[in-house]
Image 1 (cartoon, rainbow, N blue to C red):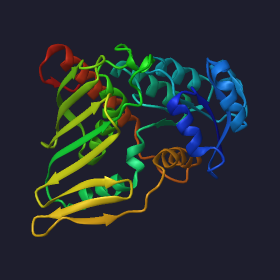
Image 2 (image 1 turned 30 degrees about the vertical axis):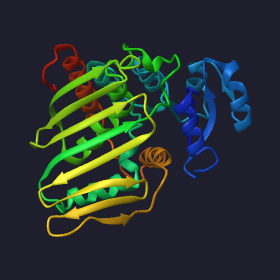
Image 3 (image 1 turned 90 degrees about the vertical axis):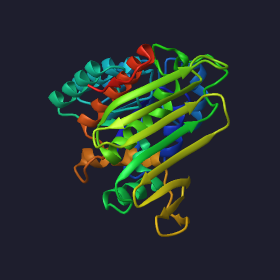
Image 4 (image 1 turned 180 degrees about the horizontal axis):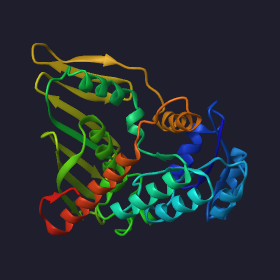
Length: 319
């Protein structure tokens, strides 16, 4: 059993708790940390979880094996390094870091301390995405030509939050939601070589953002996010022999060159829980983790290229 401390009890920190608490035989939440103890105490009490305000409390707790960082992006690097020095494994929500240098520092600290790193790109564990990767890896779709991904919703609109700070997310929703597709698509096709991005202010700052990606293998992709619209998700993969689209959390639509579109049902799972349990398995040594440290660094390098493109208005190399 992996004993964890959740750091940050905002919207997504509570999503982790809802997915895991008393629902896993591999992961146990033993305490929670939030600076706003007054605003979080009722929730923590309802969940039966010990709440304190100091991150160091989790690092000093011998019952805590790993910390889960659901904190502002700019804090990740120092928090990862502190956890590594304390001998705690670290699961970090994305983005892993805000620049490649910080990502490399975190990985170096983790490798030096011999601790595992986890990353909150849970789409790699979702049932439709897992089925699509199998199709790509088996060459069922032929040569992959183009990918499309958009996760949009208004959950984060209309209120003051660090998530709206351009210093925390220079590309707006591309950092919060679009980054899922950077990781997922890289797991499908390999490294991204070049990006072109734009972010617009229609109703609020950076509420409409998109990017075009070019992969080293030659394929292309579009990723996007709208922060002021009803919830909508889209994932399409186009190959020379067929295409596949995610229809729902348990359905995909497939069309091959010599056939008609057909729906296929898959067994839905909670990807947040599955990711955390995959992290626990890697620590226990019973399975390999889906993410490598090098991939975590690459995700950040792509985001950094997106930030450069937003400033330059041009295509930017990923390096």
